[in-house]
Length: 171
Image 1 (cartoon, rainbow, N blue to C red):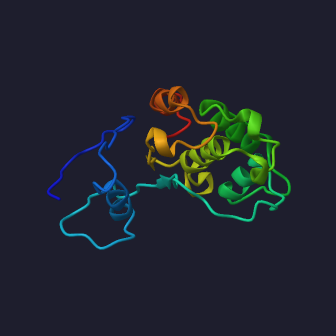
Image 2 (tube, rainbow, N blue to C red):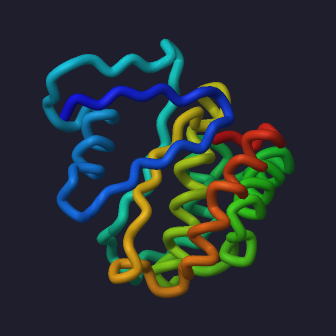
């Protein structure tokens, strides 16, 4: 209630608060998924990426990390170009998930899947003209930290995302 903030290009901005404080509701309002009072102003061509805290899917889905990223790209799934493969390799490398490219998503730990979803969110929609400019990334507490994603990993994410923005991989 009664909040105001601005996020500049290339900036990593965090919303911190106790459970039940409204962080997830704020993210949902920012994405236009829940009603809210007041005003949210985005750049007129803003592209959003969102990383859910939990993702339910059929664990037998025969889809690799790279194939998930190809689906996100919206083109080249069957015959991806070398440029598209390089873009995917670059963003997976920036979030520390390149080693997951060939693994099936149903076989990944919670933390590994979270890394892949971060890359997915940041990757945005390259077909539509680039990467996600704003990535909404709910970070959990120690009690809810996904398996395989340590505090060290979580703490390193802002720096990795800032490097990705600086290297024009996209944040």
